Length: 434
Image (cartoon, rainbow, N blue to C red):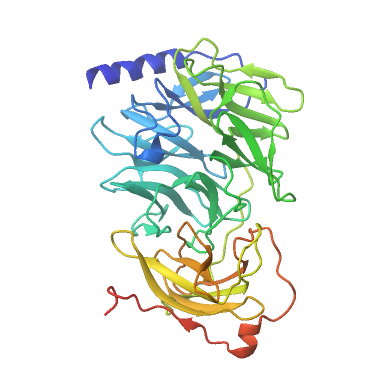
């Protein structure tokens, strides 16, 4: 432990110097001797030798939480006055979520879990969303800033999750299964951004334009709301560590490096002109996770429609024949599955798919779910590979099977609702429900 603490101290001393930063806004970042941004996907530490959140201003730099062994993952409040971070008081402790004033003062602890809590973000409704790491995976949770309430879990499928950003419309942007997903702050509406099973995507943030910028390997790419496909981002011929922090239109603070043997440093980069100023020139350690310390417009506050008295979810499919990719074979029925404690599929039931492709089912809430489309011969025509979930009282409508969230439905009443408005009940779980 003595060697690790000494290494962290060296990194902080190096980063403590005032950088040449003409016109660069105040910002916070993480100084770290070692950084592996992908380590969380296998349950390992992104900052294995410790780290510290630094606040950089025109007057110099200072450590945000001076009496902590380590601090990471800064997130600035919407009024620009406070910062969330994940911190360890001691080397042997767990990461917990803390809040402190930008100007200084004693940090306030927001989580008291027995496992690591990382990547906090402010929600516009006065809560904080973060990632809690478990023994064999992670989950997304929220807590009120005021404290006193138990954390609420939003994810109900085993796997590795990491919170990335809060979008302008109030949804939470996160990573799992090598792709980018969104979810509302009440845990409803989980879906991929594009549903295209594309390349490994990570480190995403939303720009003021609405574009979502993210890493694909060592390079940056984007999703633009008006386009259904990923497009490239003009950038320096260097490796990027996440999308960075937007300063203004086409201007970003972004961590870059020129090779795997070199550390990431933060650049003040103008995307249009290509001009970039290295803010940590000559430093021996990494500088990553930049955030601008300034007031900004909060996202929209999402009004949840969940009803406490209802304990199941309803799913309406408008047209199971609709697909982004060609579907080979006919569709006669749909099977709905959940997972048991060991992760094995358990059949909840099956029902007929109407001639127009519609079906309507009621499913158990807060459990893994997936579906299969089956032809008249009994052969599976199309099957989901990944699990999803629905919250209690959630009402979901999907356009089609693997159609993608950018598709709009036809303006017509589905045949299943002309026949009945009562969903097929698939809430009894064989072997698990008494």
